[in-house]
Length: 66
Image (cartoon, rainbow, N blue to C red; front, top):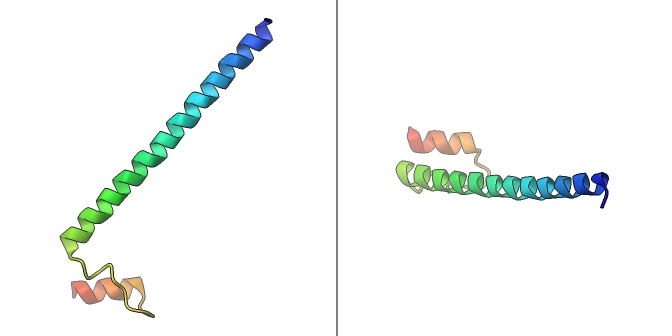
């Protein structure tokens, strides 16, 4: 086995590690965002998420706040 092959194997190991690390980071961020949305939904009430057809999000939020 040459030095080039050893370096190539190390590079493959590092790439696999980084791939798994990035997948884990995406999953973690997604879970945090889901928990945040559920917490905000619970805090502000269940009505502001349900938007009537043709109503913009800003108008829906303003109608529930005001």
